[in-house]
Amino acid sequence: AIGSFRKRGLTKVLKARPWTVYVFVVDGYWQNTHVRDFLADLSGLDGRVEHAATLRWDDPKADPAEFMDQIRNVMIEQLADMRSRSSAEA
Image 1 (cartoon, one colour):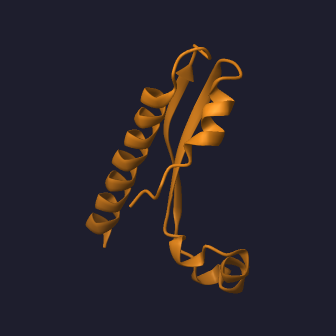
Image 2 (spheres, one colour):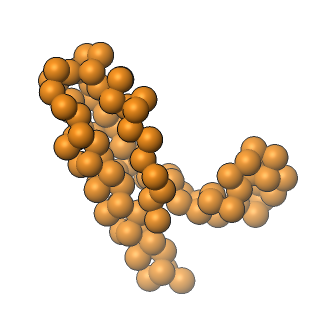
């Protein structure tokens, strides 16, 4: 599942200026969350990275809460789609 969303930093970034936001979802690396674990078994890694959406943030003066919710929802939907395709391939 998508973990907690750290909003403070993203809020500051979005309030700085308009942005094009590229949303990516990563799946399959959760067991290797530390660099040492990741590097210890590179040949055993089985993960994917997919582009989920390209979104425009045009109003730095607006409250970004709804936009961040949209990003999170896109990520949740993409992860569910990735996992359903993975199950169908197995």
